[in-house]
Image (tube, rainbow over all chains, first blue to last red; front, side, top):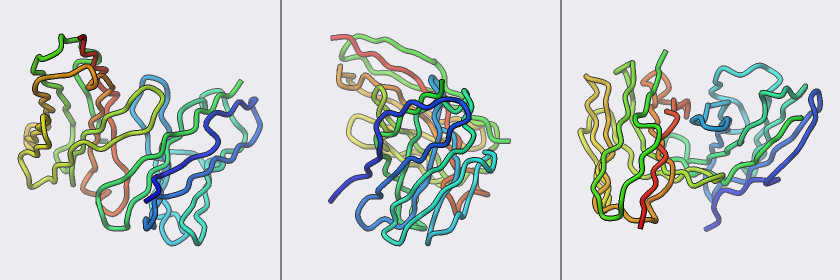
Length: 112
Length: 115
């Protein structure tokens, strides 16, 4: 059984650029959630995808968007990057309706 | 708005000591509470999940309790080992978010267990 994987591991961008982060869910999981974790803080919920549609969103602006593909993998897109977007971005997969999530190792994004 | 606080922010103990990590939350209308472990620069590993109707959960040397009415949870680690060194995060899922993963996390307690 393959766990949750994320790519890339690290990424450096400049302010105003756009970035795409990728996540492959654990085998059999149909729900993907994305979190932003700033240094020294707990993760904050960005949004969740199930059946290729967003079905829950935290307090993040529209420049944070996502996709889920038929194989349940997912992308997080961030437009017009700001310095405060520098963080560890975590993806978690689960079975819809089940409480337990499994987290990936994260993508460390640095915005200069 | 649900706010989650963890005290202390950092803790250093000698190997073998029993310890307690604290988590408090402001809104008792929760669906469940979960404790996670995070190693530096890594993802989260779920340790224990307590449903709102439960009082405690145990796994090996770990025991988590939940007092929903007072807005508190504790994670008890028995006979600590250097391998327990990590950041421990508490996360609350509000009842209104029972159908999605909008969990509210504390900032964590960074634990160091010295050999």
